[in-house]
Length: 100
Image (cartoon, helix red, strand yellow):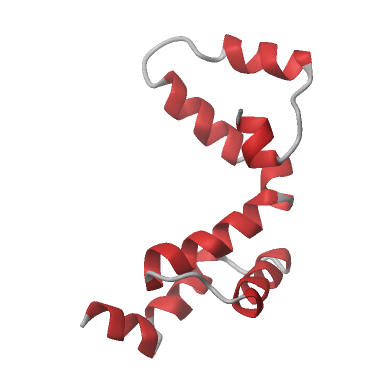
């Protein structure tokens, strides 16, 4: 399901075998999720789309407009640091209004 819903593709059998093998020990699922979300495939594909969505949903408590999400996606593609993007949102008047 991780491949289908996160990467939007089906996993190969070797990929399934690798993930199943990683599900041993304490915190195995957390470690698997962290490793999965840190893959280059996720970061280059789904990662920026999901990150831009989550920034608006969690920080501004709303859906970002397509243009807003695309702007963040573009910044991520240009290797802007995520902390700088978050800082821009946190320092915005809209974020301050959410806090009040």
